[in-house]
Image (tube, rainbow, N blue to C red; front, top):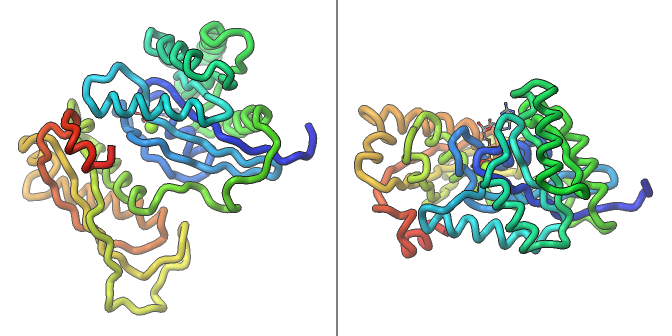
Length: 313
Ligand SMILES: Nc1nc2c(ncn2[C@@H]2O[C@H](COP(=O)(O)OP(=O)(O)OP(=O)(O)O)[C@@H](O)[C@H]2O)c(=O)[nH]1
Ligand SMILES: [Mg+2]
């Protein structure tokens, strides 16, 4: 391979819960996208940047594709389709432990229709969950799905297996060109969005049924603590920041019964969510924060165009 610098965009697509965001984080080397065992965790495209000596890859993590049941679902599908035309490589993620189904075939059909010229790559995710034989079988199945021209790479983002191989394979498909982002920049997510997402991730933990889909988080206000001393500033994390921030966030749910669940008995669950989210935010941003969480009902917001607009969809 030549010494030329290569750079470009790759988007990870796939059904919900196939490990796209976990893989994005593993390749970037830091958590920038939230993950959960509930399907449809990711709700906007998230850019993660991978820096290597001769390469810069911009990863675009996308919401899982599925048959939409709400206006939110439709909007998310449209969002993913918009990314097809903007990337050099489309990487379709299929877990090693699930059979290829109509959902995967539908995605491949969409991609070949919308972006017939874009390089398509198969990624078999979660290989730590099955035997080597099963991985081999899934590689064959994905190869058959995508056709003979597509490379297929097996990875485990959780175990870190084959992650660098995937970086190399994607890099080899990128055009020659300069870096798009300065060294060390890992994402272009605004801090406010990161905070809101980490709060939503903490709130997703342990809730069931429809509730995960009904949750949305909005940061209302971020205020630096006035009487904190200058020299107490924490010099770590993504960016330098004041010693302490007061963060006011609103958690939206769709029904009063959900509000009660999220708050918990005597506010106990909300307190747990606040503690978990605060730790994550402090770790990633390197700033001490005080979280003020409030829960509000926005009736059926997933189906309501006006409310969706207010929540940024
Ligand atoms: N064992 C194992 N689990 C994994 C791996 N990658 C992801 N997972 C798990 O799979 C679940 C879904 O992971 P996500 O990364 O949130 O999946 P996603 O494709 O981004 O999901 P959506 O955003 O909903 O489309 C989580 O519980 C992850 O911990 C892996 O390599 N091995
Ligand atoms: Mg995701």
